[in-house]
Structures are given as structure tokens and as C-alpha cells.
Image (cartoon, rainbow, N blue to C red; front, side, top):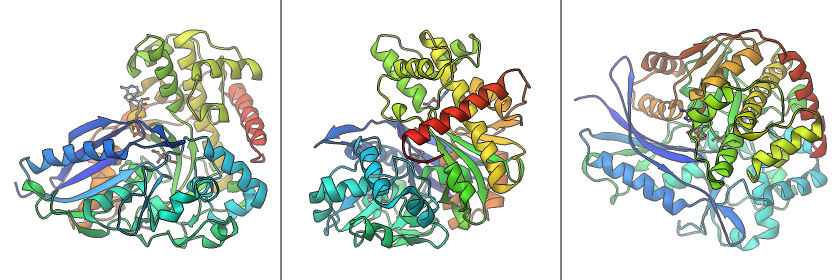
Length: 499
Ligand code: ADP
Ligand code: LRH
């Protein structure tokens, strides 16, 4: 057919996919060509991503498209934020990209906060101070692994590492840059003075381009069959930025929850909001598509459940996510409560035990077994979402009218209902593949097939029906929320992040 097809490569922390997406004038048609899982491993003393494995999965997906039925006009990659690869002067990777879940990050964070203070960092960038930020990994590189930086000529964010492998480009895209903690979203500038102060070399920082930029042709060995002639068009490289593009916001000012390994919870605004209130709430200002800003908070999302599931698997109990959800729906709610963002849940070790320990230490009933533990994780996530809703009301002066949930977590029917109950507003779930759809839609816009962000969201809304959940009122949420906010305050104090 004469329709334009584009390829969206979407790399999440647990799995990646290569999808082909076409627009028929009304709807987007997304076909996943290849899905693959991947995991970080420790190499040379740092937890790192298996880039070779990821690249193998991407090549396999692209090979399927090359041998497919439609010409592919362009390819674009989005991936999780904060992580980066280092290229030497010849464009070769210095080593495998490091992973934000390494212990070095909290260590460097504590050092940096002691040296310059959280206020200095927050006011320089408007980006939340959180262990995973790139700035802490780079400080660790500069101080603990200087040989990495000595060999490096260019730093590229993860999606742009792949754009480099696809096209030879050596630029980074704006939304990906905005996750680093040393980039100012509003002025699109690296905050080099902050890095100078911390002794981190800044000559590695690349040129930054806007989403929708054509960075070159697909390299010859990839540009075969249906991929001959394909361009590399960078989408919003940060997966969350692509997900927000692919979210059919129910009302102006709706809350989005991009629900996967993390839950990214916030609103779209026209300009960064950096104030005492956003600082106190540790809300971040990350770059969005078409000059928008994502005012949001990272909530340690389904990672907690993923970590539990891995633990139970190792102990011989293999349960799918829908099975876990069903078990949790069968036990009473709002008993044990944890703060998913507490430091003990970051590395994902021994999570069920740590959940029980946390409840015991902080005065709620410790869950017994898989059903109760899953319920604690989901109740607690819903409370964390309400916390963002309340903080946003203070920061923006208005309450969100509704919530849109996208990503794999929008399949979690219990969590969706609990979210409606906790937040007291209607929740609309889907699409599951919002990230790949948002990625593809921005490529189609760059090719002239789709219009502005409003037009894109209209088309996304027509593409897939959303599932609604009405709030049920329900006892107990206010008291549970009070308790939750006390937990958060204590955990933040514990980490030296202030209250
Ligand atoms: P990421 O891109 O961050 O790796 P995804 O958006 O693929 O994550 O979401 C993965 C998560 O979605 C899983 O960890 C799981 O918690 C949740 N999920 C996926 N499918 C289902 C399902 N059928 N029921 C409940 N939860 C699900
Ligand atoms: C979600 C995400 C999130 C980042 C984290 C590293 O996949 O990109 O927005 O903060 O991963």
C-alpha cells in the first residue's frame, strides 16, 4: 500500500521491542516485529547493560522489517533515561554502558550532596535529586573510574548510542539529555558550571538536537530490503517523553502515569516550574516533545513487584503478573504500607523480606506470603500516586481532573482501581504500547504524515479504546495516606534530602 511505515525501537529496563507503525488517515497500526528481554550484569566492578544483547535484538527486529511487506521510511529509538555510553575518538564504545542500579550511584549522591548541597543541584536544573541521575554516575566515573573518561571523546545517552550504531550520528536528543541532572530543560543547555564545580570533564558533552531531527541514513549494512533508503529520525529519546506523547489525555491537565518498571507520574506544562514548592516535593522538569515540559515525579513503580516476582521465582514459585494481581485482589487492602521510594527497594534484592521488615519497623502489619505482599506493593503504589496528585495541587494550584495510565502497568486491573480509589478521580487505562506509538507518531509527524501534538493525541485516542475505572470512595484511604506521607518524610530525611 502507499501508506508510510516507520520503525519504532522501544527499549525498557526489562524488555525491548521493534515495531512497525503505519497511519491510515485515522488510526495508527502497530505491529510488533520482535520482542526481547534483557538484564544488566556486573562487569569490571560496575553493573552494566548488555548492549551487545540489546543490539542483537534490535538487529533481529530490523531484519524482519527488511524482509517484510512494506518499505520502511525511518527508524527511531527510545530508551530508559539517565544511562549513557562513552565513545572514543573513532566512534567505538569505550566499554559497555553502565546501569543506574549500581551501588556507586547512592555513594556518589551522598558525596555530591555533602559538597554542594541538594539546593544547588535542584536550582541549577529543576531536575529531581534522585540516586539514579546521570550526574552521580559521572561523578563516580571521574573519581573512581577515571580511565573510562580518559579514553572517551563523546558521551551519548542510551537511545543515541543506538542511533549512533544505526547511522554513525554523534548527537544527543533533548528529552534524553533532560534526564541527566546536568541539563537545563528550559534553556536547552548543559549546566557545565555545576560539572566544573564537581570536577567532571565537560568536553564529552555532545550537541543536543530536538525530537524529530533527521540524523542521517541507516548505515549500508542495515539498509537492505525494505529498509533501503530508511532515515534515522530521532523521536523523543527518553521513553517517558515518547510515552507522554502517546497518552490520550482525557482532559486538559490530566495526570499521566507511565507505568512500567518505574511509574512516571505528572502533568504536561509549557515551561519548567522550579520553585520552593517543587523543590520540597522533589518534582522534576524533564524535556517533552515540541517544547513541552514534563513536570513529574519518579515513583519506584512495578520494580518492587518485579523484584518480588524474581525472588519468588528463585524459591520455586512461578507466577505471571495477572496471577499475582488476582491473588492480591483476594486479600484485604490497606493493611501493610511501604514507601516504594525508600532506599532499601532500589537494588531489588530480598524485596519481599524487606517489605515485611519495613512494615514491622514503621508500625503496619507485615504481610505474610505472596498475596499479601503483592497487595502491600500495589496499595502503596496507589498511595504514592495520590502523593503526587496532592503535591501537584500545591505546586500548580489546581487538582488533576482525571488520570491516564499507559504502559505495561496499565494491564494491572487491581492497581488501576486502587489508583482511582486513592486519588478520588476517574482513571483511564491504555494504550499499553504508548511509548512505541509516541515514538512512531513523532517520526510520522517529521515525515509530514501527522500534525502537532494535539493531532497526534487525537489519532492515538482513535487507535485504541481506553478502559475506565471510577473511584469507589471506600474507607481507610485518608488514614493510610496520612501514614504514607509520614513514611516519605522520614525516608527523605534519612537520605539527607530534607523534608
Ligand atoms: P518497561 O518498558 O519499563 O520495562 P513495560 O511498560 O513493558 O515496562 O511494563 C512492564 C510491567 O507491566 C511488568 O513489570 C508488569 O508489572 C506489568 N504488566 C505487564 N503485563 C501485565 C498484565 N497482563 N497484568 C498485570 N501487569 C502487567
Ligand atoms: C522509565 C525511565 C524513567 C527514568 C528511568 C531511568 O523507563 O526512563 O523515566 O527516570 O527509566
